[in-house]
Amino acid sequence: MADIRLEGVGHSYDGGRTWALKPMTWTWRSGRAYALLGPSGCGKTTLLNIISGLLTPTTGRIWFDDREVTTVPTAGRDIAQVFQFPVLYEEMSVYDNLAFPLRNRKYPKAEVDRRVRRVSGMLGLDDHLRRRSRRLDPGRQQIVSLGRGLVRSGVAAVLLDEPLTVVDPAMKWTLRSTLKEIHRDTGHTFIYVTHDQTEALTFADEVVVVKDGEIVQAGEPTELFLSPAHEFVGHFIGSPGMNVLPAEILDGLVRVGRAAVGRAVGDLPAGPVRIGIRPEFAVLDSAGSTPGVAGRVTGVDRMGSYDLVHVLVNGHDEPPPAERDGPPPTERTTGRTTGRTTGRSDQDGNAGHPLVVKTEAGSRFEPGDAGFVRFAADRAFLFRDAVRCGTVAPLNGRGEE
Image (cartoon, rainbow, N blue to C red):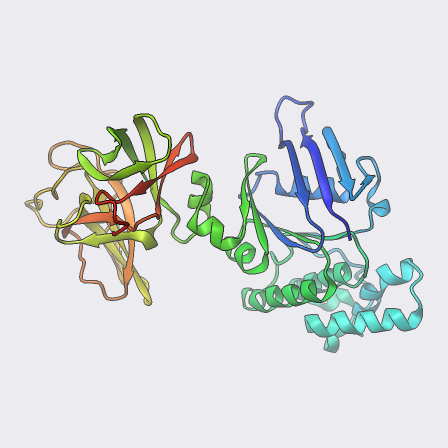
């Protein structure tokens, strides 16, 4: 095992005209479980392949502890890598596929058998050890591939590139728990590439969020959810993601349209900002006894254990009057979902901004209801150029909602 240190590492596939991975300096600490999270095409796999030696970076250097490995091929890095789709010898049995990396390195026969049976037991492969790999379904083949990556000891790191893509959804929960157990038992450094926030948040000690070839934030799952440092993190993590509203700082107050929603905290000059608030920390009231931004309900998603209330806020000090012809037009009315609109204008011609509020199940709200949206203390953040620059404090200064 080793700390994996990147110094100014970047990669371009077109001679530097564009960067799949923008030059970065970063350290993966030995023994940690990391998730590399981001959308398709953001540079996750490029970064993983640079660490493993499948790609030589366009710029920068790579260190395993004090040993530079920038130009060292994969075989010389002692890395275990699992790819998105099964990589097996199809005519070999499952046992022989698992044993192959160990036999190739001249492990004693008894040690090979011990390790193969330990990994097969963890991954639920005991009943398949004598079967040829080509006779397994794709999901089971991928589990064998996963076992091949985990069977060795003393590797510098285990790199996992979307390893559960072809695995049946019902098995993913079990396998993620198994991977965490294996990580605890072996102490290997794990770097797990995924675009699935659930996989990332349930597996990793630390989640590294990537956008457009660069790391925008890294931290423990709770930190990324409660304290996003970038608008993209707030949007990408959470279901649904963070609401973002255009606002303005004026005389130290944060205003959405004419409505003052709080005080700006941070060394912030006056001017435009964007407020980020998660649906969990937005509160919808039918009365305006406390400061908030007025709006009208456009739809309610009845999710069973909770409701998602869609509101079109107008930035006024009071809700818009009810529309003559009943509630706003709906995009759909199916199942337990009622109504929804986005980007509408109110009756005065002011553009509205859609926002989602998460409430208890069985909320009383219906399309057409007027109300005020306010923000939980210390849970509304201010962004400029997509980067967090401050927070919104309550107007009364007491930390109350």
